[in-house]
Image (cartoon, one colour):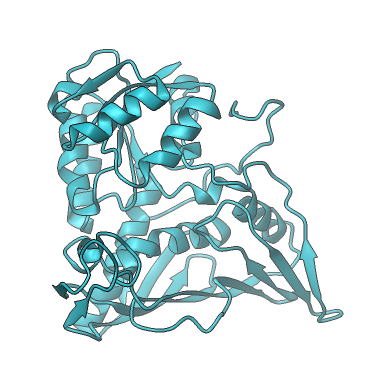
Length: 366
């Protein structure tokens, strides 16, 4: 059983703590660390965690820890993951892998040099929704995939999030924030991306916070907040993706996959389950299809458990840097294409790993 050390005990940590300690039976959380010590103390008490550390470096020096779980803010991912790798730890990071493609490449270089694994979120693609859609598409239910469309549309986080400023700073924006869910789902359904073309804009220079506790404060926007891109997949399909913090969601589908014989409506890639709808050429009627895999509820840490099992059994992890680096390059290339006003060919190549299996006992992976 591999031992986990968690760095960062913020908002997302709650579901990780629940699932690591109660659902996934092949990993054990042995230490936590947060700059706000009270958070670490609360986690230790509630989840019976053996150790807390004042600094991440103390945690990295713990020889009992095999994998560092990096739950810090996006712009902090690089330095935390880098130091964990340099201290000989495998790393599972929340999305994105780094705030830039250059950061991601450097982390991969260090990991390969050290003989370590780095990978990470999102792991929603391992859930029942996307895995069922993958099985359906691979079975030929919609014929040959020829296209896809994804939409992440919202009017920003400053109306509801308690601390929304970082969404509009380096490492933030709708693409780095939500793009990982959509692109990870798409590459698991269709395979790797060959090239991208994008247009990116900042619609508002400033945003006013209307949520507590920062009500009335004004944020200077430093990143693009409306990004639309075209992806040419290696399989020949053409996909579009819009991510925005600037528009009201009209209620469109999150992801649609178009085939020569039908269209598949894919669940929200930010979730593990969801509704799957098929429209087939032969009848053009909406058919709601059942989920065929486990983990339809919020199963964050599923990817961490998969990485741990892969390390123990020497199989390929489904959420390795091969995927997270490819997704990061796709996201950055949309803005790069916009700046250059031309199509950008990708450096990274991506081949899908094996699909999920349904184990005899939930919480035990193959």
